[in-house]
Each structure stands twice: as C-alpha cells, then as structure tokens.
Image 1: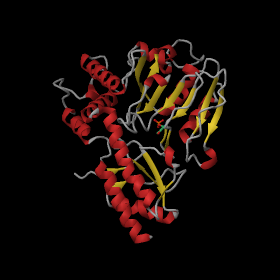
Image 2: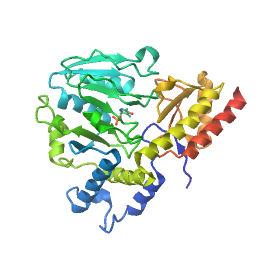
Image 3: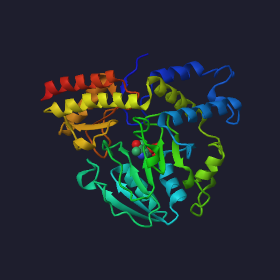
Image 4: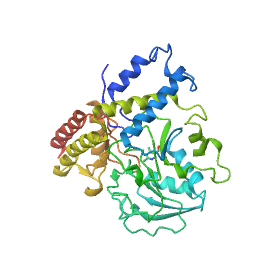
Length: 360
Ligand SMILES: *Cc1c(COP(=O)(O)O)cnc(C)c1O
C-alpha cells in the first residue's frame, strides 16, 4: 500500500487515523456484530453515533444552545435551494458574488424571489474579496448570503460583511472546521462535508432556532424543510448514516489534535510554507490578493499553460496528485485541508523548487 499526497479540492484527503478506525470498525462496529452501513438508523447504536457526533461538533465550534445542528442528505447545491425555500419570506435576498459557488447560489435564488447581487469581485476574476463594510443592503432582504471560502479562486473573508442587521447565511464547505468561528455572527452556517470533514453525500447545517419555522415558501418539499429535519433530529428520512459516523470520527480526531484553535495554527503554518515560496519565486505566482488568501485552497500559475500541464503531470508521477486548477481558472491549485499533513506541503514546495530550477 502506498498513499499519495492528495491535493484534491473535494472529495479530499481524510486523516489516516480516521480511515484506520473505519477499517477496524468495518465488520463489527463496537460489538454490534455489524457495520455502520448495515445498521438501522432507528437503532440505539446509531442514535449513540449521531448524538456523539453532534455533541463533539458543538464542543468544537462552541455552538450556543439556540442553534440547531442538522445532518442532511445531499450536497451544498441542495442547500442553495433550501436556503431560499426556508428563509425567503419577503422573497428578497442579498448575495455577495465572490466566485462560482456564490454565483450558483445566487442563480438558484432568482428562481424563488428577487436576489440582489450587492457586491462582486467578478471584475478581477474573483481574485479578491470586495469591501463589504457598507453594502446597499435591501430593507426587505430576508438574509445576506456569502460563500466564506472560495474553493475555486482561493479567497477567504477575513472579516464578515456588515449585514446591517440582516441575518448572515454562509456556505463554509471548504473552510468548515479549519479554524474557530463565532457562530453567533451567523443565522445559518452550512457546508458540504466532502471538502474538509468527511465523505461526500451530506451537508451539516447550523441554524439559529428562530429561523427554523413552518413559514416556508409554498411548494417546499417536506424533506427540504429544515423544521421537518429539526423536529426529527435529522432522522426524518434515512440519513447518510455512514457519513455521520465518519464525520464523528473526524470530530474526535480534531479534538485529539487540540481543537480548532490548534487546527488554525497548523493551517496557518502550512499555508505560510506555500505562500512564502510563491512570494519568493520568480517562476510560480499566486493568483490571489495577499490579504484575501485562503488557508485551504491555494491557486498558482507559471503563466504558461504548457508548463502548467507539465508540472501537474510530473507532480502526479512524484505522488503529489490532483494539483490541476479548476477548469475555469487553469493553472494549479493545492487544496491543503485539515487532513493534509505539513510534510505534504513541504514535499510540494520541494518539488516546485526543483521544477522551477529546471525550467526557469
Ligand atoms: C464544492 C463546493 C460546493 C458544491 O458542493 P456540492 O456538495 O457538490 O453541491 C459549494 N460550495 C462550496 C464553497 C464548495 O467548495
């Protein structure tokens, strides 16, 4: 067996310790005589798994009691619609467009009401986060929407927008649990888990209680109404039991590593290695405005598409895989989520140095 350094944006690297736990639990989860995949979601054993996962997540993020945690089947794309169906009571919402995922959420919202783009960084290919200190927030807006870490373009909000009293809804798919968050600053936090937490197939939504109501848009499917799920402890439909279990293991792993403040320290340290190299290099260039750089997704280019392709190819042969940039951006992108060890980033930078020497 040989494992590569996997820089995929998602589905992405998981902690080896977690994969090993999955392996050892595979045939017989804690004396139950069965795999988690074979278990009833109504069983006491599974109830223990989901309760413990929620408790650990609450611990990690210090989630206040007036916020619910939902484990929901599906993807972040499902929530693009669910956010509107559950929150757009005035049929108006303000979106800040900082990349592909924000743009998609915004496009979805236009199906349900009036979505206003109150700021955008499209003018410079989303290479920065716009100034959000004094936006033209709509008086009627039901919420203000952001994509907090832009997976494709490699930017991250360092300060949250001034929403002028409106509830903030944030897609945190690619920065979930990468650092501590002040949950009280948000109405809704959600993200697909396949970037920084677990296997694909689920989102985790953290929602302030008063935003979970029966007052949803007409035609909202029962299963997509957050209240349905909150009332049933995320067990209205059969949930993604396996995913909840793996996410639970990741929560335990994060706690064993020292929690989110320690993860943040590590993530800063890892990203710094790569950004320092990019800043010093005369060959590779980062594509993002310095103050808006993501700790999780680092896009870079040589400026020559053929050299980019050659770099990706040779890196793959050296066991540094999935470094090709998103098809809309080109170049390279290194996703260095929680589970990417520092050694992986060091190996990447070493390889970049050798490639640079050879081709400069
Ligand atoms: C990957 C990603 C999505 C899309 O996720 P799906 O689960 O495939 O719908 C949405 N938002 C962000 C920030 C992402 O990184």
